[in-house]
Length: 360
Image (cartoon, rainbow, N blue to C red):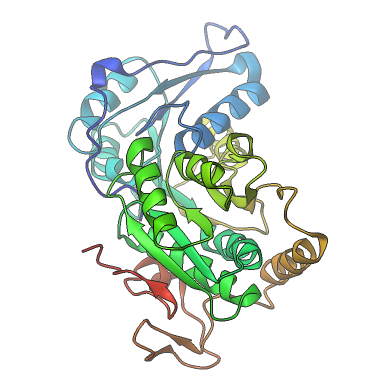
C-alpha cells in the first residue's frame, strides 16, 4: 500500500489551491484533492493533478476544483480536510496511503461528504478506495529494461519497503528476466518518495556497482538525470518522464486517474455515488506504459505489446508459478496464481533481486 510513512516536507500553510479554467457558476459542485507532494514533481503528484485538470475540463463550469499540495502524511492532514469541508467541497480525493486514517475519521465526522482514498483499504458508507494493477505495467517496463541491458545487471532506485513497491520490483525483475534470462535487479532503498538529490545519489551508487540500466519507483525523474549523465538507459514511474532524458528513455509505468475520478464526481453530483474498492487495470486503461523511447527497437516493442495483449486478455499473469524467492526456494507452485490479497501483502523478493525486502 502506498505512502505509509510520514513525509516531512512543506508545512500545511504552504499548501496551494487550484482553480478552474472555466469560470464556475455560483452553484458549481466543489471537488478537492489532497497531495503529498508538489503538483510539479513530474511523477506521482503530477499524475494526480493531471487527473484534476482532466475532470475540470470535462465538466467545465459545473465544477470547481481545489487542491492542497505538500500535505504531510499523518494527523496534520485532518486540518486540511476540515478546511476543505468548511469551504464547501462535497467530494475529497486523498492521494496518498498516509492520509487513510484521517480520511476515514473525516468520513465518519462528515456523513454528507464523499471521500475517495487512493491506495487504501478502509471503506465507509461515504468512503471508497481506489488503486490499480501497476505491477502489470511494471512487468512490461522490466521487459524493456532487460532487453536494453548488455550485462544483465540492472539497478532499481526504490522508496520504501512496502508491498506496493516490493511487488513493483518483483514484476519489473520478472519482466527483465523474460527478455534477458538470468538478469538481476539490484535495489537501493531511499526511504523517501520525493528527494531528487537522494534519488540521484542512489542511482549513482548503483552505476558505480556496475549496472548498465536503471529503473525506479520514485516520484521524481532524478534517476533519469543520473542515467543521462552516464549515457545509460532508464525507465520511469508514475508519469511519462521521457522529456528529462529522452535519448536514454525506455518506457515507464503510468496511471490514468482521471476517467475514474470523473465517473465518481458525476455520481456524487447526481446522487448515485456508492462506496466500493476499485482496482484498475491495463484493460480499462487505468494503468499503462508510457510511449517507448527511440532506443527500444521494433522487435522488443512487439514482444512487449504481445505480452500486454496477453495480460489484458487474461492468458498471462506475471505472478504465476513456479516462482522462487531469493534463496531459491519455490515460493509459488507451478501453475498457481497469486491472489490479489497475496500480492497486496507481498513481503518477499523473487530470485534475481539483490537487496533486502525489509529495507535494512
